[in-house]
Length: 284
Image 1 (spheres, rainbow, N blue to C red):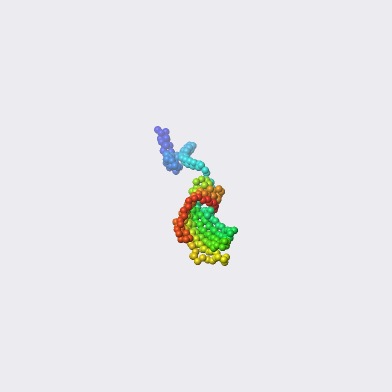
Image 2: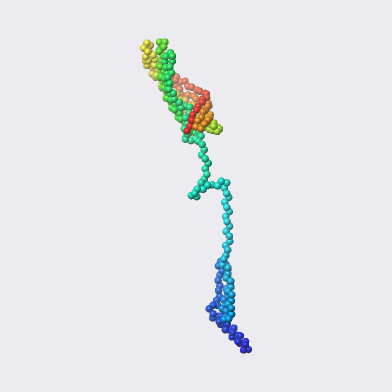
């Protein structure tokens, strides 16, 4: 009975020591990123007993789920070059060589002419003539041309003094203007079709003179100078052969008709023409 009381007294003493000890604690620490851990009880060992081993701490390293790598972009057929600044450079094809009919071109063709000459006869008399006809066609839009031409012609025919007859001499001045519109269509690598429709207006003035008998000098006639006014519509449709860059020769039908024509004697006499004509020229 005495031994049993002694055992109870020791148990009571141990419980009192444990209850009064500040090192006895209940800890409840949640694991980072995981479920809370179970509370642990730390008991201060009694004197003479080895310390109890501490429990292993909960794992703190949580491995994140791997992030999937985006797929590589599909390679393009032709990699686009990039500048040092990072700007994208779009590859461009080489520019096309200019050719006849492009907008902004100026064409000089067979209508551009000038002449000066003196014609003499063995029996006497002579003719001096001067002629200039500048002509230009400009492509205001692709394959669409606008043309203009001017005409200046002067002729002076002196009468003959042979045979004692009164031969008549004339002086003629002609002024004219032409406006045209055309369209060029390519039918091959070096062949194009260039029809042009034009309207011509020109006016001539003729002064007559005669040789007075026995004096050898020209005397102006009393008659008034004669005039002639002509309005012509013309269609010229040549095929052009571009033998070298900026140079061509052409051949095609040519048709024209007078809308108005009064001859020098005042009688109307309209003309009609159907034929073919050649041309040559260049452009820049």
